[in-house]
Image 1 (cartoon, one colour):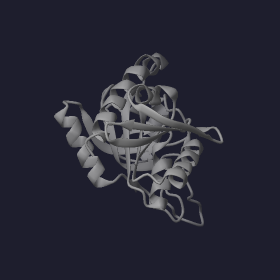
Image 2 (cartoon, one colour):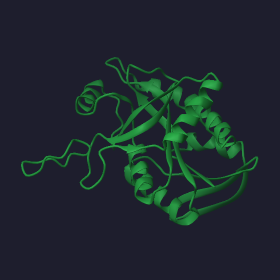
Image 3 (cartoon, rainbow, N blue to C red):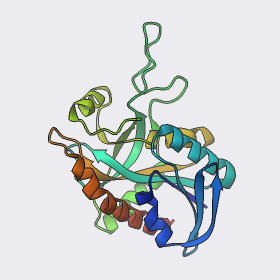
Length: 230
């Protein structure tokens, strides 16, 4: 069984409309959809935005359904090195809003005490999805996704993040939290994001609003196709 977690309605609608729904269940306001596509069985959950919602949802999914792998998919803000509509596969996920350093300790920015600085996606899943996108002529980049509880739309704020964490391709609000839970439960994990907006000095909120639906559908279609190959 494959687990899929997304944050908002726009990110799950395509799956619901293009699969067979076997069952739905509600676990304390987390709705799980048991889906089937060809010979693949899928558990889909809408987590809601943010690290706490994401962590709670993936924990429930692992405890209740024990998926063999978990894919976190959704949208993200991109840096100027990517373009709207590109996919970013996170081979590494980091927190940009965690800072446990003080005059008594010397922890790297983003590192939770006792845990890795970076949480990694399963290398085989990353490679397979990258190859799948290439075969379908979809631009898919592999790199670092930075996660925090802030909707980043301000280039100055993004610059501050980039100074602490180098080589970021995208920022979101869930990936690292889900990756951390999967790391602790030893569940293979993959995070893929469609870029809905580019965060620059000329950023306009309309960009996100205009691109969100198309980005969500485009990524969902490819994820569903990919799932049917594994």
